[in-house]
Image (cartoon, rainbow, N blue to C red; front, top):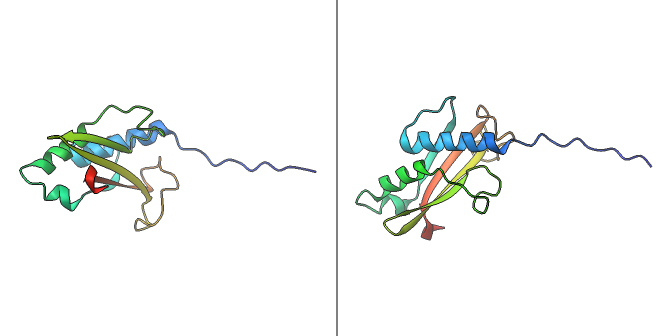
Length: 129
């Protein structure tokens, strides 16, 4: 009996994805331009928009300033999820990676390639989860 070993697809480098996610988050939330172009968009939930009194602006800024990630809250090392506290309220943020030409229907095949990956940053109140 002969066994054929199927080649494993190249696994993306988590540190590259993390750096790209961090750069996109800083661009979207703080206006800090990345070293290379990164495609994406940011969404906030309706309840975050309706929070009033500058709450949403504080949440967006705090999301952009996150720089501490631990294995228990970032198991893949992609820096794609986090939580911040604003005025005693927990705010979650999440970055999802899609194929750039798929109209957000398909996950990114090569998530470490910014030319073919579209990032979507969603910021929401934890109670919206």
